[in-house]
Length: 227
Image (cartoon, rainbow, N blue to C red; front, side, top):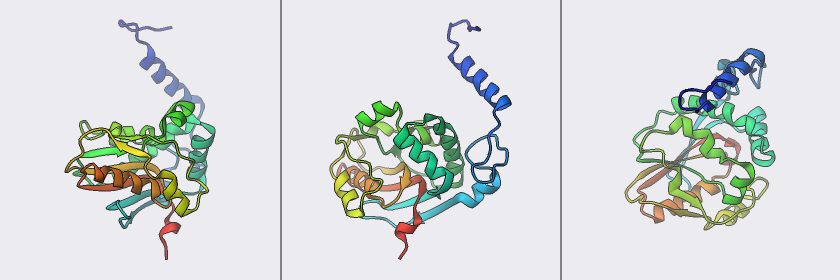
């Protein structure tokens, strides 16, 4: 086995494994099955799956943008990540977040903060889904600050709960760990369904002095916001 001068062969192993996988295991688009090098979709299907749908503000959230449609392969991958701990989906989803960040050109935020997973669930999974998905896409030095928001109360999964139950489920579950006074903040999360979690996080940030809070999610359910 190869070791560099510092005895640190971890990066070498990662690159070797990535190259090996690319040779023997060709990725395919989750929609049309065409060969693709990165992400979940081929370029054609990615264009059809992207929403980039701007949503109006909620009670405390000043505005939100959904990335992809919360359906099909993307929905299945996120469910397997959340409820079965299938970490193999983190990388392709993180690659899709890069495409999303490129398509979503809004700038001028003082902080980018991810919605945190509660400590017990994070230990069980071994990773934080929103942070893992968006870290590479939005980790601008000095702006990416996921530690600013902490989850201080364990909550039941929002999936399957009625809208009013979702709000009561997440009420009081966040706290701010840092100075956000006067800041324009971008919150990132994996899914926007009713917006209850994002709105509770925005409320907590504003109570701590944030000037404005917007959201960007990997995917979303547009149907929940139609008349």
